[in-house]
Amino acid sequence: MHNKKKANETTTSVRKDMRIDKELLAIIEEVRGDVPFAAWVKRAIKMRLDGLETKPVESIPVSVSADKKIKGKTKAPTKITPVRTPNELRSEKTKQLLFSAVSSLSRTKKSEIINARYPKNECRKAIGEIVSKDSIAKYWNEIEVILKK
Image (cartoon, rainbow, N blue to C red; front, side, top):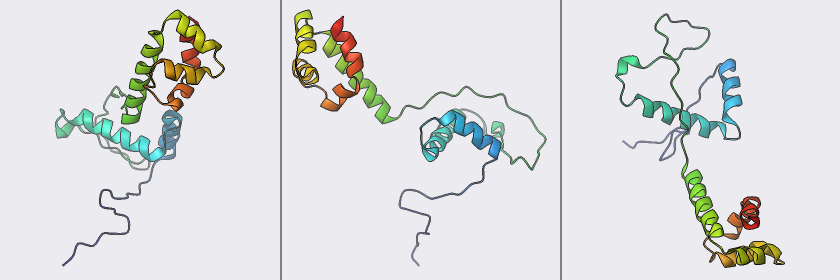
């Protein structure tokens, strides 16, 4: 007998539908910013599970819908630490590399870059093309401040 995949399954994931209280959804919408909803929920679940690894099973609070009430202990809110994605980490590393390279340029080289016809290109050539043109364009306002010092 073959194990057939259901319509809501892929080889790596399963789709789950869930109902969320309107009040909770409003709070989530305020907090999540421009992060896609599904990504925010996945990140929140991972953060919650990481926090539960050292706690016994009895201390896991049960979340209940607003129309059902269960008497029991209420747990104090835990401190939420943001989860940094690989893209955020890569971006931070690129910024550090770029800013340190620009800061290490001589004063004459910095003034040549500022006065060049295409300063972004000159900057990229001066630092040895260690980052992409897009990275220089993205952080150009901050680079200009460093060059004008």
